[in-house]
Image (tube, rainbow, N blue to C red):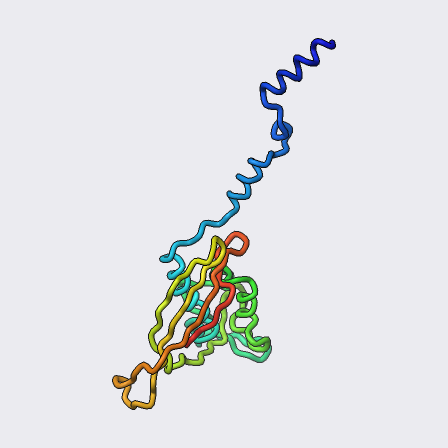
Length: 203
């Protein structure tokens, strides 16, 4: 028996008896697992497309709601909602998916909450309804340019420079650019997705 034990120990060393053989990952295995959880950094074209889409979707809440059928209405809490007509957004769940795919949970929650009294969109009998609101764009804002800057593996900045238009010149064809305004939007890796963690419209 005394001769068998040294042989068993030697065999164990030769065959690599380590923690991983009993279900406990070693340091190398842990590093590999962590690396697999890191989100790839999106390229500039992807970020630009996401920013353009974010402007559009944010505008459904802050600028002009999705198109509606005014012949189909429903009153909730004294407010009249109209059935949304959109192939891209056929129901409330699709709208939620689009919003939370682009924005952080905080921004998404704020958009759907509205001002607290006027909820912009509702799920009514399985269909998407809207208050059908619009505020109109700021006509003193002109074209914009977007610069994408990668800070690190989890943070990208979208820097926007917007033209300021002089409206005192009369006819629209004689409007001129008198300055610019700059805005910065953070696009970050949060959990298992890249989203905008701050956003607002500049027009």
